[in-house]
Amino acid sequence: MRRAAALLIGAAALSWSCSRREPHPPRSAVTTPTRSLALVLAAHQDSLLAIPGVVGVAEGLCDGAPCLVVLAALRTSEIATRLPAAIEGYRVDLRVTGPIQARENPMSFTVTSGAFTEGASIPAKYTCDGPDVSPALVWSGAPPATNAFALIADDPDAPAGTWVHWVLFNLPGTTPTLPEGVAKSETLKELGGALQGRTDFHKIGYGGPCPPPGKPHRYFFKLYALDGPLSLRAGATKADVERAMQGHILAMAHLMGTYERRR
Image (cartoon, rainbow, N blue to C red; front, side, top):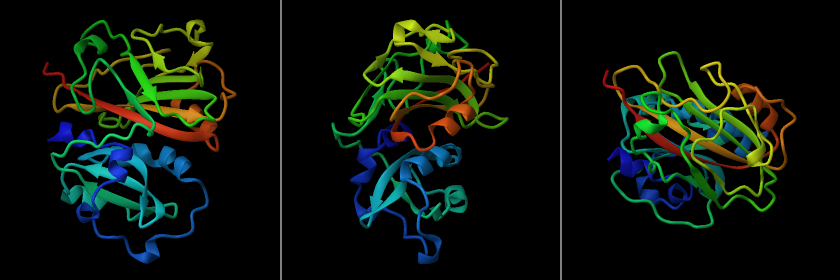
């Protein structure tokens, strides 16, 4: 059920039947927004994805107004307790997916991988239990004004808080893919001079899933379409990139995979 629910990201969520939505938040919870929905999504997606049971977050429309759409396979008591009614003036709409397949919308901004599908287990090849190479990524539907991309991969289920596994930015806006096994170097000349930042492993470049034994962790590969490159040097952190992106995000797409270590 989790895998099927996780397929319902972005445009699929936006077209969901009203009968499956949660009750509207109180009118007093929704105020006049002071910044764009894309910026609010970028600033709060980590905290929303960290809520157990949440499988996706996207921009949407609620009764004709922009809102944040949060997807979950089931409505749990923890989601009901932790999910806010509104964030920075935008309504938060919980949509319970159940085991229903996504609807296709080729015009949406999406990112996929041939290594694993949305919500599926990430092969050991791309983790610390294998060669630890980065998976190939492919995307489509970026806004026409996109001049650069930034990528952040992290794990919101890590015991110490969200753990950063990959920071890459200033990828040219004409780039449609990332190959498998991106070099773990500061500058990627083969990718138009894109730069890589420092992860929570205190290293440059991709560091794959390496959770402690126990329940599977979720790993989000978040791709940002930007209106231009960021004025940052190689080695920048996730926090540096998120600050620099403020006011420059045109769209965001993400791909989520899971990984579990038994020993």
